[in-house]
Image (cartoon, rainbow, N blue to C red; front, side, top):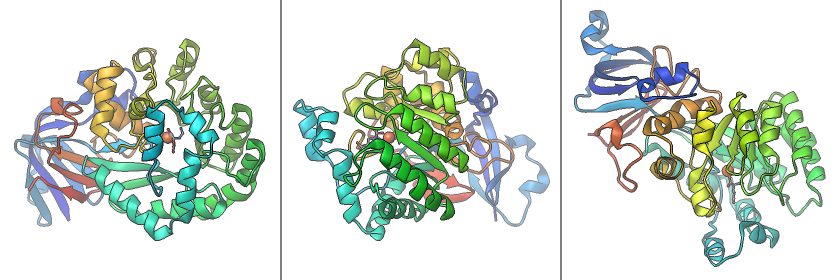
Length: 414
Ligand code: NIG
Ligand code: FE
């Protein structure tokens, strides 16, 4: 069955932003057009253009269902490209401790932090993890998210990392993409980061590969967490096995993560708030996407990443929630975009491109998602208000109609 979104009042294609690879995005790159129509056939965009140019034979098809989009704004579905969606328990007590002056690293050194979520996640069943992951995914979808990245990293053993990734694979609705983050913290069973990374490379990655549980491998490079040299060796081993790689880099200190990311051709360097001019230049001259996560910076009371310098130097940036129970316990994509506008001097067109084209690049899905063009996946968000009200009023529940791969996954427009 085909679906025709007819008489769309305002369509944002993001075609220009996609053509520029998400770099130096200006308002004209959003491709804002009025009185448009868009045809969905199976999972793809089969036609898009001015309603008055809609070919007759398309409009007359028997199997066609028409939806009148008069008064509506249509744009690419959002790509939420950095989440720790699967976990059990919460860290609300630690949040209070941090507010009373105990640092994230101190809490981690006392066995809290990631290891406290690890204990809860190890105890949880696959079914329980899948259930909470689905509820959280639904929450993203209600905000217009059609592609969702999900990391493991709270199991930290073969069995429990597999369980987390299997839970993520059970999520239905949006397109999901799994990332293996076994190298998130040192589990109690290991004495050194090097020994643990060797174990991950020899005993865990082959299983992840064989069972097709993830296509990407991530490491938390940070003082007090994984050191850059051993992490680089591990990521190169992952690349040799056919995984894409990415890095949690330069979040709490300038600890070498973004340099590793650029050197090995990582898809993204994530966080990056501590980088200096030298790292900014290297990132801008690379294919590595700068993954900026300002909600984590808000919760961690850190500075924000130098987005303005990154963008002006020619970097491609993506924005995401970093949703996790510790450093960013929020799923609010509006808040992320708002912080980027208020605190990182990003323009609204830059924010919209970062949450679509930029994020699609970070996931290497830019040929399929991020812009609305003939032949691309029908991943679409339809809203009632003007696009200029996006990433503006936090807390407002916008009515929406959302398609992922041509299937309606959310509808509150009716
Ligand atoms: O992206 N930085 C490392 N990982 C997460 C935090 C995870 C946690 O605290 O549970 C992050 O901020
Ligand atoms: Fe993260």
